Image 1 (cartoon, protein in one colour):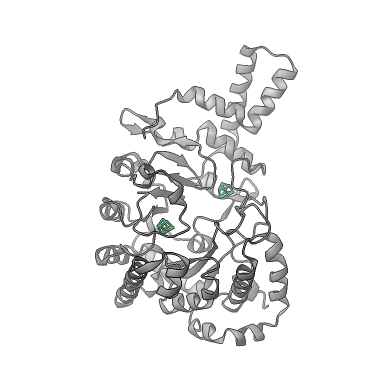
Image 2 (cartoon, protein in one colour):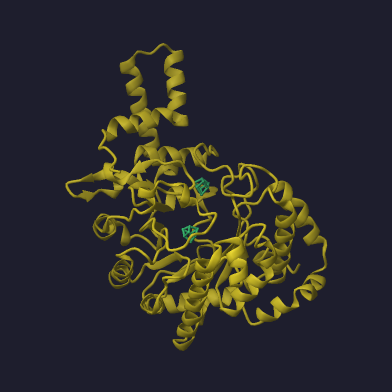
Amino acid sequence: MDRPQTSSLSIRLEKLKRSRLGQAAVRLSVRLGLNKAIRHVLFQATSRVLADNPVCLDQIEDGLLRIRITNLCNAQCRYCGLRSWSKEEQQRSMEPKWFYEYCRPLYEKLKIVLITGGDAFVARESFNYMKFLSENYPQVTVMTESNGQAFSERFQELACQNLFITHFSLNASCPEVFQKGCWAGKPGETAYLKALDNLWTYKALLESRGLDVFGPSVSMVINKDTAHDVIDFIKLALKLNARCASFFFDYTESDMAGSSFGQPETSRPALKTLMELERVLARRFFIYFRLWLPFAEAAPLQEEVEATPLAELQEKHREVLDLARDRSMSEELRQRNEIRAQRGKKVILFEEAWTPTIRMIEVCGKQVCFAPWKEIDLYPNGRLDFCGWYKETLNLRDFIENDSVDWSRILNSPEFRTIRNNIWNYCFDGCQTCCPMNNCTSPVIPIHKYGFDRIEAGA
Ligand code: SF4
Ligand code: SF4
């Protein structure tokens, strides 16, 4: 499905008019009875204000490029969002020229290239592209997101050699739970065992090279069929020497804009267990589950967990604590960065290490979501945003001229400048309301607040 080439200037003026600043200008010009020519001048002035405002400018230096290299995936998770896409879209892969050539001007600036999908390892060009980045841009850290089935030995070797940050959505601690809660039947069992086998092999490879601290992160989706598996999943993560474990509540079970769980009888105990384990494992092992939390559910449970003596929780979760006895988030990060520096890679900061795509930065004196300033998100159909949770904004195809792309036109386009201006002013039109970084439905909780920081304070 090719997008028609459109007049980008008229589209941009239209979008500018729809922005908060643009609409204020429209209201003012109408109220003052200004004619069309004067209105046009007003729009241009608005555009100049945005152009000159430091709040509106990108900060892509040391930022993150998310390349959705293909929509193809070799799994069939029952809650996969891609299933609602057309068959054609589900099979679309990115044109290699886009990431080999058009994105080339970005690589010198970036710190992380996150290759995802679909599945990062199933595109025809996946291996060559990861090798290309590793050889030509060693300062960049390649990050991958996958279900693990296609993480074959050659990918494992490449990832190990080049210190990839790998993430695997494993989704259960055993094939039985995986089949029940994610992908039913024999295909589900085979896929799970293959992925797990790959992760054990990778663990052994990292250990044989003295790179144990570069273990992957793993994640699971919590639903009514997997909620009971949370503790066993964390145990498995620790046995795999994972860097951290993340949990997401199944969006098909809840109204993501709501303040309560759709399946409270299973979700509530799972959330409470995660809060307890977060406290018990603080500073040792990072668990992340706060991407979407219905506030009405989270607040009372958090209170209960805070009121429980730590010794009691440690006793309750002794087995997990024993597995994490020798772990240290800060020491592992220090070791990783020391090795990265030896290999000419940029240092990864604390929050980049644990939640590279979910974090806040300071822009002109305010803490804001990092994405509009520091992230680019490119899809196989050309969709070009800074965040997959923001409404569709630009398309790469509109910026291809004379077979190249001028990224300054994109990074500081009127659309992106307007959105930065809006978000900096706490206007989140276009953002998903359930996103914790826009404070629409629940408070923004720093990733370290209930883990790392608490023990620092001696609690
Ligand atoms: S691994 Fe991810 S992309 Fe693949 S089917 Fe599962 S949810 Fe969808
Ligand atoms: S939805 Fe908005 S606040 Fe959330 S990550 Fe995207 S840009 Fe940031």
